[in-house]
Image 1 (cartoon, helix red, strand yellow):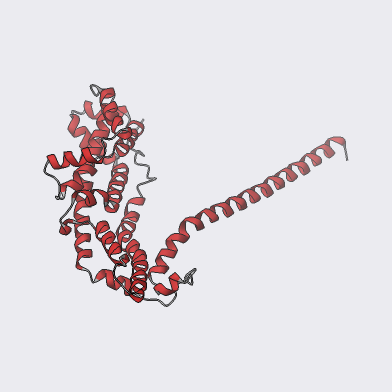
Image 2 (image 1 turned 90 degrees about the vertical axis):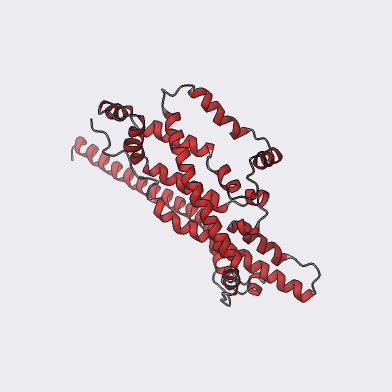
Length: 310
């Protein structure tokens, strides 16, 4: 065999060895990644799984640490106690009303404002940006906030819950960034040449291309309002206006009260509080969890595909 043939053969052998080493290294890398991601997933998912199985288990078994991987002595007594309460259903209805109105008003404010801030032709754009940035870092505090709401006669009304929630500056800047990065000027110029004004361009051209952002913003505002209870706790005195989170909070506080009871009564109240703690998490989170799959598809959707031809 000639020297050239040997050199080619050695080169092929070395190439095969290199490919084999790369494949082995890739397998090790992917295995390590799978182990790390699996551990992270377990750390995140197990507490959620534990809440679910604990809500179906006997409170004594949960307190004794017997509930680890599966429910023990399955019971629905906690759910039954929650469902039988009229204030829980009233809280559900109030929260749904607050959430729906908040989402509608928030989208009506955030999407147009984000579009306006994304335009280079907006007069005094820097001034508006400073105006929105300052509240992200500085606030007047709770007492001035309460005085403002009281001065506007909004205390103990549903608008005390809704109006402070209709604009998130963070969501506004996310919307602005989306428009700047995904709505080309050529598309706006084409609409202008076709005779579309500012409003027609926004509603006919921009909004249909921003379905993903609209859906994500709706989800953010809905989740934020659904989980909110602090403003309700501060501004509402009428229990018929309480949202679900505040109703569940009152139930837990009442169930944990041990004043003036015997040892057996205290233990029973503690068992009830522990069971309701897990049940309340499921009851309050289930509607949002059911909503998420309908919005999730918009997160990575390519809304600009085919919108502008070269």
